[in-house]
Length: 525
Image: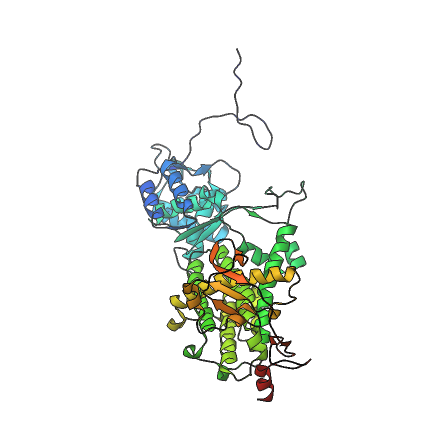
């Protein structure tokens, strides 16, 4: 009968392989405790992601002895002499020193081209020794980089802070570096190991010229700029395979515009701001104190994520800050105060003080990601090329900025505000109003929610001309949002005329192009 089975073939020539036994040189995993040392050292090494530690440890625990020798025409030689009579390797530091000196001056080929007597010296008869002509496993070469890169340079330290490569290197560079260092130094060559996935196209396919789906970094840079490529890297979760293509670059560009527009808005709002205008923390309104708490909160998270190489997490936090906390909330609410309040009012000065803190910290946080954009924004502010954003560090956070009670309060206010803004959008879609300042809703809330609004101008928070917070039971037809049971909105339009300056609708404006009392005080002040 005939048995059909798989059989190894050469990947290049497709010819079947022939197995034969040959003499090789090995490093024992057991005789000198190399396996135990390596496993113990891995337990003291940081891995990103953590699963990499389990994977590499499992490989070390199960691997056979390391075969160091290869039979090739070119490579780094295995510099061993062995006694022809006994088969024992020659162990002599003087011989090793002569080999090292010759290779340092002439390169590795001198091992093959020089007479054996050059290395053996006067103490040994060349006729008694066989010179090994095998070369080293190339992974031993790369696994030795910690020695000749880190240990021979005064500006670097050993072990390395981090080794980073693709996940295939658990079997390659990470693996051989670990064994080489543990065997010769008794410790790992790295404090941490980071592995990332591979770059695929938008459909998750491997890039190839035949498919025409190759996206080169230079092409992205030429078309969109280096900062777009950098932002794509941090916005991707590198623990998994990364995808890139025209649509993904387009979405990345949209995210980039959010950061850039935030910086542009801040620069415009801060025009003319100086330290003399700044307001102390205890003079600030509650909303400004909430923003400072968010900065303090974010500062701690970004520092922790930087230490953990969690760049995707940093991107998510910064995008949420710019998109949800600032553009859609704080900037919207404080636009009226910024544009219409008296320039020297404490409230307006507090807003600009907080915006200055936001700008200062945001440029520092973005500098490692959007290197060119952050520098452009920073130079627009300082106007001093010697004072680069890349020479800054993260500024320490004043302890008074942390305030969990402020955070909890504004979480509740924002939750109620979400229902109001959704109700206003529905009214706008129905044609009842053209802008939110034409509205004066009544907001029915629980007593707990009502307490959160005490001391606050609810209309300013909702960006309406008027607003009433009520603990009365809401009518059956009040507007509600699913999942938020303790807030309901009854829509109403504001009474009065439109202020030509702030656009609020108030009873005191009775003629066209008239202005409200607040604006009149500012104009005549």
